[in-house]
Length: 275
Image (tube, rainbow, N blue to C red; front, side, top):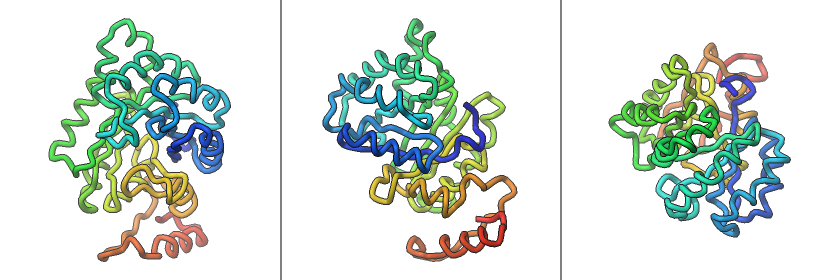
């Protein structure tokens, strides 16, 4: 699967109970092009039974699915020790990737360890592995070094999500999207928090593999994450391209402003390619 108009918005499913997943996945399929299933959110399923909990969901999925078991220090909702997460991926990654439209999102340290196990590594379809790095402390000084570290792995899709301190932190994130295509890679680059919202809206038009949205305002899984429905209908992410005119609103505070609703509705009604 490549970066094109069919893969734009990823709705994140993060439920505490396995019984709620079927309905949440159906809701996500209505508004998104791809679904992220966050296994680290489940509290009623043991780590030994995580694969069984998602098999029927994958069989019935109406969209491609990303399976994620996030570590607590990179944003995971449950504390699952590293050894158990490593064992889960070691034993289940190939079975998960046997489903045609399934991706897996794994932190860099575990990706490197799996890649170092030669027999296992040779069996993994690395084209559908997302090697990810999350930093909630702020914008790292050496963002390019983080990208270089991810690039040493065989994963085809590289993800970097860091917290933005102000809107200028969006610039280095957009720069990350400039060169990976020449390397045969795809990149997901996000500046989290309100200051980084431009990267969520404009990322796909700048070459990002996808952008994430919550099921609704009560289910955001990262700072600054807007809903998948807002990305689709308010910001018209699927219609934005490199020729789209981009306007900004300056002020402090502005998070409560009605400007996105007023101006995007006006642009849309007039058929203007602007956001």
